Amino acid sequence: MDFWPELLANSWGREFVAGGFGGIAGIISGYPLDTLRVRQQQSSKAGSAISILRNVMATEGPSALYRGMAAPLASVTFQNAMVFQIYAVLSRAFDSSVSAKDPPSYQGVALGGFGTGAVQSLILTPVELVKIRLQLQNNSYTKLHQADPYKGPVSVVKNIFKTEGLKGMYRGLTITLLRDAPAHGFYFYTYEYMREQLHPGCRKSGQESLNTMLVAGGLAGVASWVSCYPLDVVKTRLQAQSLSSLQQYTGIVDCFRRIVKDEGYHVLWRGLGTAVARAFVVNGAIFSSYEIALRCLFNNGSIQTENAI
Image (cartoon, rainbow, N blue to C red; front, side, top):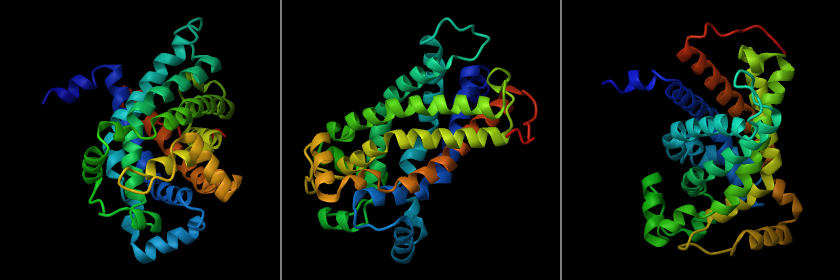
């Protein structure tokens, strides 16, 4: 019964909880668009996001857009709390010359984000593997190569352990690391830079408006996705296959070469529009929810609502 009061009694605990709120808001607000993005990436024959949406609604129902959400939702509190905590530490560790009373330099922000993305990939790889398997379950590719349908995240995990072992849970780790490390550098750099441009002085005062949080967070998400999108396409293709299905690709380089040869370079940007739209919505929600929750937990006063942009 004393767990929550003790957790919220220190700054780390409050930042942990705020990170959880941000992550939950991001998952719920952007998951349908994420499902459309994954299906677009898996096959060049899938059609546009609109056509996929119509087909899913007609054949599988609205709930299909949220299939696989339990896996990232279950881990999102710890994952986002970890991301913000590691970033806070690393952004200062990479530039110790900055006073503790001042915000970290942009160089520290970028390097801190890079390190945060690298560490996060260790947790994110199994979660995204399960999510992708569920999101693609009822499309034509998976119907052709998968013998038995998955009943949920637990069913996917059991199948992976049975057919591929523990190593199978980390299928796609290398490509996730290559994607997330630089993308998080762009992510945090863009957020810190844009919030300061939209609301000068807010990096030190911490009193930016809600509009600033939404726009800066949204632009940060867009920047990070644009910087790593081709790698995300390759990651989706690699994690979609398993030992029990047809092995199309032997590795990252083979996957890259074959999809470009078979479908052209444009396939590396397939679904980018959907990803960018989702990124703006999701990351605006993440940063806004995080900052608002943090202010409430720290009792720093009411949220500013004036338009500062």
